[in-house]
Image (cartoon, rainbow, N blue to C red; front, side, top):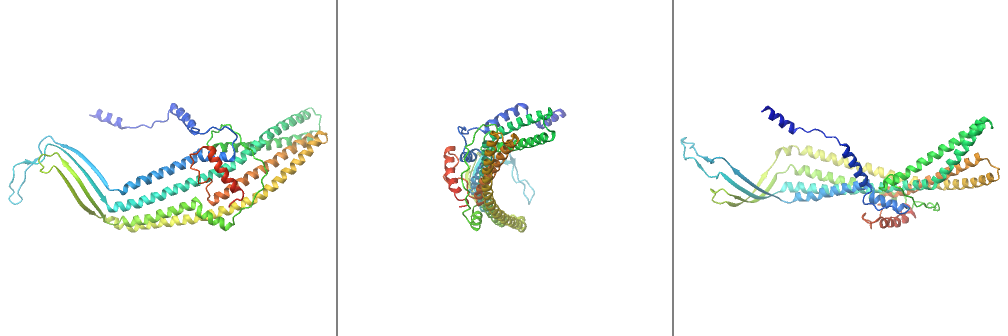
Length: 489
């Protein structure tokens, strides 16, 4: 007996199983394959609009938000079935080893009034089909279904917010990656010139063919230039990896970018600040989400009251039994039941208080979200206007530095300028161009941020998301070129 109990306990015991090496290897392979599965291959240089299209279609964060929305829709669809009457089918078998006999005893005389008898077969099959409808449950289920509908709309707004954020990130990463491609070759060439000049200076210093301090100062300056070049290369190269991640590409995916020219002139924001605030408070996902949350809170107040009411349930059913002693083996039954959980009445005040507190919380969240939106609108507008001025200055600085470099290169060819001066001015030219490109990237990001702060969708109504990349990119290009003529319009 003891051994049997021991075996039973061992059989019921579970032991945590760590992931095996085979499972880990298999999972790694499947994950890497799943990341880029079903993606259109990169066959040409990627434009801004193709990068946006790929992010819209293949970004994994966007896919997660879409799946959350699908799950919320599924919950809402299921909730509608709770509004229907309950229809339950039961079937069963009952058997016993002997007859289910009984006798009766008189309560007045105490004598047995009947011999033992039975009215049930030893083996009985029975079944029934009963439909019931509870009025209170129907009311609560209807409110819950309405709340789930609002929750579905909340997830839709969160999906919009995720897409808007992704498009912002694509703008920032794309323009920084463009700077990387534009300057990477020149940075590599400059680093080669610096290494060569450093080696030559070091050789002269080691052979004592030059004064020590000027040579060491020159080497220090060359090392500083090399450090700046390496820092710029690192910063710019990271932007391309970030862009690949946003587009859903593998980090080691090779691709090139379509490099635009710096020939556009910045344009002023078309809308006034008050107009931008009004549009943002109507469109921003955060604000709209709080409206739906308040709806849910208001319905919670109704539920708190309904739960305290009596419950009324109507039912009707069809029954059958194989018991041979029954006169009617098939019959229908029907009726109405009323019930009232009196303890729910005493908890009504507490439930209403909790629901009111939740509603108040959502109202405060709405005000906080509105304040944050208004601040973001003001910041995005001010940032864009400031970056417009900075871009003009950076453009002028890059042009002046380019003219200086041309002069120094001409003097160097005529042996009128030192190699140290030439390397320094090449670095200054690259820094000026990098500064211009950085400000340009920030200005483009700021322009996209204006539309994000207004709550505008980054894609047109003609896009569903299942089109091919070329179709999505063409739609995005039409929309964003129109917007770029006047940010905030």
